[in-house]
Structure formats: structure tokens, C-alpha cells
Image (cartoon, rainbow, N blue to C red; front, side):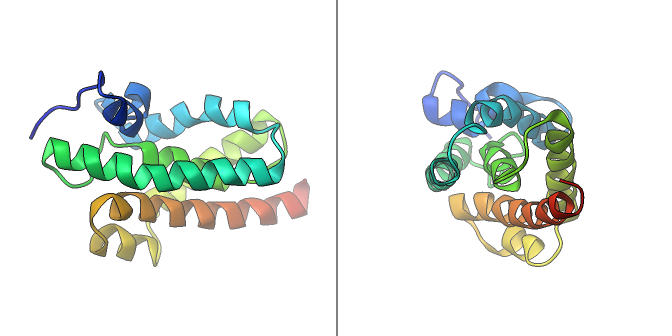
Length: 155
């Protein structure tokens, strides 16, 4: 297995600006690293925010696939761009405030780790960059749905 080259912009993004290099729980650190970017995006209009998330997710298919190929291993734990995008999906239309960021973080990590159907199927059966991204995107949708219920109840 080759090491990621963080001087390579593709690897740098796939490894979440280095957050995926954490020796333990790189997915959690990758999700944490997505928060400052969310804070920069949260004031955008909903269509612009969703557009950025869609583009980031599509670009992520390439980033994750290319980095995985370069490293010679499928879905290396340090590839965390998928966590960035999954968290950003979770946070679509979320109210401002740290409470909602923490709730979104916990919900996304729950669904990403738990891997309910079809998250687990996507994780095990879909390969390449799409496979790396898809399970986290679906986990993000699950977390988004629960988040919206919580917002409706408490928001």
C-alpha cells in the first residue's frame, strides 16, 4: 500500500486536508474537519448550499476513487471526503447554532457507523469512488431526515 501524498491536491482533499491521517477514528476526525467548512456555507441560500454539496459529492467520486487507486487499497480509512459530504447533507436546512451542529454530527456518525440498509449494501457491494462515497451519502440522507424531524419537534 502506498502512502497518500498530501502535496497532491487530489489526495489532500480525499484525506480531508489531513484529518484522515488521524491514527484512530479517522472518519470522526474527518467529520469534525467538515464543520468549519459547514460554518462557511451555512449562511448561503438553500439552492447554493445544495449545489455546492452536489458538486462536492460528484467531485468526491473522482477524488476518492483516484486516491484509492493511487494507494492500491479500496476505501482506505483515511479517505474522509465522503464524511465531509455526508455531514454536509445532514446539515441541509439546519438551524444555526452549535446545538444543531452537535446533533448533526452525532446523527451522521451514528448512521455512518451503524450502516442500516441500504448503507451497508452500498458499503459492501459498490466499488470504486462511487462505492466510497455512496454509503456516506446515504447515511447523510438518513441523518438529514432524522434532523428534520427533530427540527420540526424542537426547532
